[in-house]
Image 1: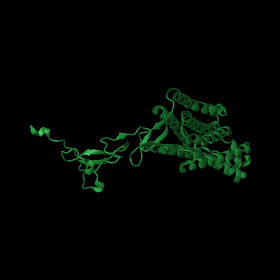
Image 2: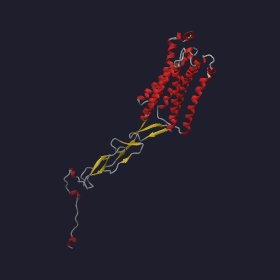
Image 3: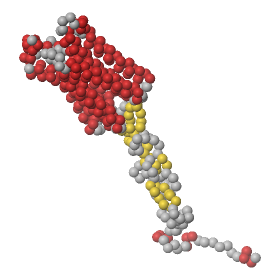
Image 4: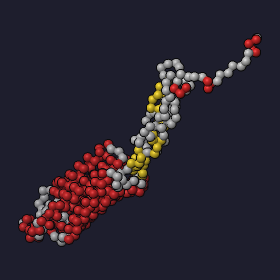
Length: 366
């Protein structure tokens, strides 16, 4: 019991001499601390002070030492390079100025728009000549105007998309391409009707004139108008922020609203193109001073090839590259229509004016 009367025992930490650098107190652990940006994992021993360190997983951060768990960043943020804090994600869309694709699209659209405007001016200037009047000049004017507006639609695909541009880019493209194909179908039918009307007692004589091509254009375009208006009313396209496809950026894109309506517009456009191609192919050998059907055949072949190739490319790309695929399809298909149909006529008008006379055409048909 005498031990109870002993004096108290005190330890003065400042007087202890540790065999460490700068006389630091040794830590009761067998590994170094896990730095920010990493987390602890259990070691292979039974001692809790022995553990390993691994970097935080993709999309996670750790801003203190010896964290047992990393924290995931919000959808609109991403980890920095050291995985120590969350920083805002970059926004990605096909802007007007910060990508070579935009520059190519702008130059291509403006150049083709200028060429189309020049051709339209030539046709207006020489609208009374036989070459321009062949196969309904009004349909040629409609086709040229629709091609010009299609080139202008490229500007709807550039810049940050919003709800209004998401709606306009799809609706305008579908309608204008349908107008172009419908006018080509009307011109092809006129070739066939004009040939059949020359036969004695033909019932097709009553169908020749401006009414038939106007009806074909109106009916074929009206179907696409109904499809587009139903799409906008029921499931309109809208702006969408894709935060999950990439960890370092947010894709600002257009959600089509409904894949069914989107492919309905493309499908109807494909049906029109197929019918126009078949009709032009069957009428390509009909005798005529300037049989436009063979040029329509080539133009529809180019048009169908471009849009068939576009579908797998559209489905396999994301973000701004998906938009670039659509722009390429619009520019290429309309350039095919412009080159196959109007360049031969412009060549005759400007370089072979002796072939653009009534006497020359009458000698060819005689």
